[in-house]
Length: 277
Image (cartoon, rainbow, N blue to C red; front, side, top):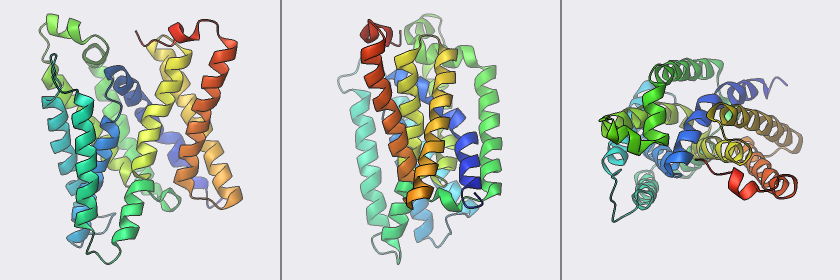
């Protein structure tokens, strides 16, 4: 228990804001934007490491955050109403280029392979209490901002045509949305890695969309899914001496698979009920 205590605290406290953002991302149909932003943040961390900064240094965080802001600007500018190229394609390109650039940057580093693995799967077992509470404090501030401007954020994600009709600055709110997401992603990539960020953002949100219609209920279901999968993943990792991050990701995947199977047998008309509209 002493080994898994702080990883458990991290997995219980931190995914809440990720689930909330995941509901927005699924509705926007830019599923891989979080994965791309996480990879861009990881690229910033790779650059900092080559410049002889440690992963926990504030300079490393600043480099990651700066790269993430650039990614946020790109995703804001590429969201248009009439697109000849889907935004998801551009997001995929950003992800691939950032991943390839990270490999190039660390190709001559002494422990390049180990650092690349760390950016991908993280090392949540060695998370420190101060890292958890610092990230949680940041997430709480971001949560307050989203609550204060919830009408605008929800309209931009769920009713973009109405937002345009009302004359709201869609790009302005988009950039704020992605900039705040950049803070979330940059903080979590140092703790859990790229794969855990993507899984916490998308899998609980998809599970919630399968089971509920209202935003509040989806949020609750997403939080419960993330919490239960975290506990199961940590337990399986501890009992079988498996990588913790990968175990949690697989537990989240198993939860989604079980819900997909259950929805086919227990809910008539499940195909229509799962619509996000």
